[in-house]
Amino acid sequence: MAFQKKKMEEKILDVDASMQGTLSFKDPVNLRINGRFEGNLQTKGNLIIGATAVVIADIIGDNVVVGGRVKGKITAKERLTLLPQAMIEGDIFPTKLNVAEGAILEGRCNMLHDFLNAEELSRYLEVDLNSILDWANSGKIPGAKEGEAWRFERKTVDSWVASGKVGK
Image (cartoon, rainbow, N blue to C red; front, side, top):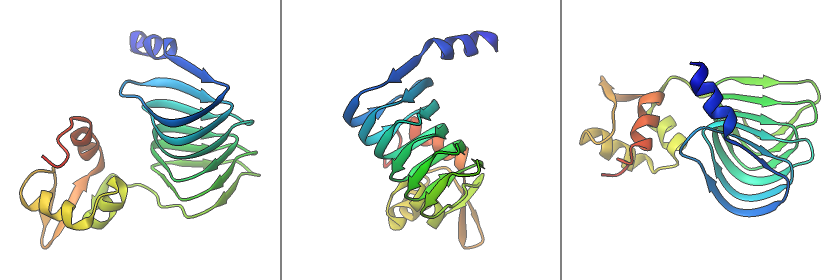
C-alpha cells in the first residue's frame, strides 16, 4: 500500500498557467490547477482547483476539490469537495459531497449511486438512451435485467469504459 501511495505522490502536476484543450489522464495523478483552463478534463486520482483558478470545462475525476471558479459539469466518481471560496456554475454529479460554508453552487446536484438504471447511465456516460438499451440487450455492456428494467453497477461500467469496449 505504501508503494502505491508514494508512486501517486510522485505524479504531481501543478498548473499555474492559461491552457485550452483536453487533458486526459489514464493513470492516477495529483493535478492542481491554479490558473485558467478551458476545455475538457478527465482525471484519475486527485484534482484540485485552486482558489485563484478559473476553469470552464466539463470535468470527470475521482476526487475533485474546488476552491476557485468552475463553469461546467463536474462528475466526481469518489468525492467532490467544495471549499468556502468555491463558485460552481453548472451541474454536479458526485458520489460523495462535502460542502463548506460559503461555497456557491448555481446548478443541480444529482448524487451518483452504486447502481444506475438505464436513464441514469445514459446521463452518466452522455450516451443516447437507445444506445444504452441496445448495448444492454445485446450483452455489450455489463448489466442485469430486473423484470423489465436494466440495472448497472457504476464501478463495473467504469471498468468497462476504461477497457475501451464502449460501443463494440
